[in-house]
Length: 176
Image 1 (cartoon, rainbow, N blue to C red):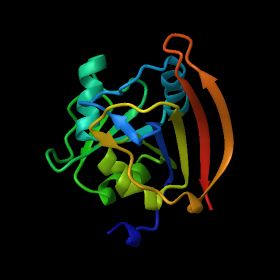
Image 2: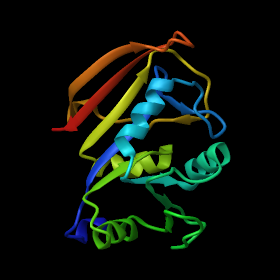
Image 3: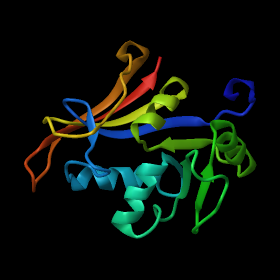
């Protein structure tokens, strides 16, 4: 059980979400916002990034492997503690993830989805780095309900994607 562990990393949820709560469509982002992808890369580079198996599979399909220059931590019931490719590790529960982080002296963890993983880690998270996409999109994956009263927005920037013309907003929320 996670609560029994003494070690707990600083957990940051990182997500892009449409106005209607959509975060994915058939394993892909329903939009392409170059600046958001660059922000994701800048924030997560050289850090461990946790995701579910479906998110991991969609990334490997798209880029031919896990996220480069990061430890890819995959939380799934389908594979157990296997290392299939460079910097990719599979875990069957949260305790194993935290043990691996402690063993490898990582104090920070980025959580990159999908919906089930976000729901599991929201109560433990210290920060949310959210890109609010100012448009509704069709999708089959939603960000879980979260109580905004538990969070304080401390940074925000309104932007517009030059190609798609979609407005978006970068927000940083810290747990109160």
